[in-house]
Amino acid sequence: MDAITSETGQAVACPTQSLPLEKVLLVDDHALFAQGLAGLIRQEGLAECVITASTVEVAASLLARQNDFQLILLDIALQGETGLALLPRLAGYRDTPPVVIISSSEDERTVRAARAAGASGFLAKSAGRSALVNMVRSVTRGEGYFPGGVEPVAPALPVTPRQMDVLLLLAQGFPNKRICQSLNLTEHTVKTHLKAIFTQLGVHNRTECVNLARARGWL
Image 1 (cartoon, rainbow, N blue to C red):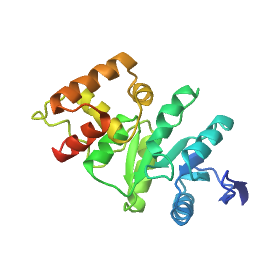
Image 2 (image 1 turned 45 degrees about the horizontal axis):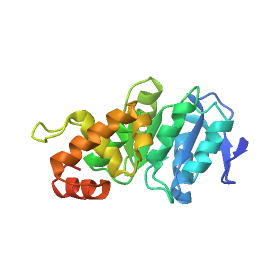
Image 3 (image 1 turned 135 degrees about the horizontal axis):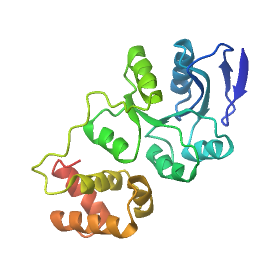
């Protein structure tokens, strides 16, 4: 076996046989989980090499220097910055690999936020081997992978689906610029959506907006 040393200094074994994916980037700050998932990916014959990164900054640095990643597996709860913050930064790369969120939070709000941010799929950390295999196969075929689907915004909510996308990213801590990049909207449009949401809730700032939206069950 060959070995590649990740940005975090971890050696990742790479078998020599031909597999569906050559190189996967796994972004997770829990070393034992990352090592276990990387090993499982190789055992299942899903990728030749798995490179690990523990932060958004490390992942962005790797992606800037290496353009041959074919899949990114990204945890949301990272130290220092939410994992979703990596997605807007991918907009400047020429060949962007699909991104699948892996998270211990399996609630609908988290799945919606991942989808709104532009992720190609979502895999719960509690998922088994078969789900992992199905996810990789689906995403590499160019299909999305969101187990169980994501239901559209309930008609009873006084916001549009696009306003809900903006609200979900706002709740994840995204500034306006990154919301624009994630949703491919102009800054003026994002501000218009935020103003409409603030008006519906009767609030005056982002913190009040997110807190009240959660209290009302919008998030």
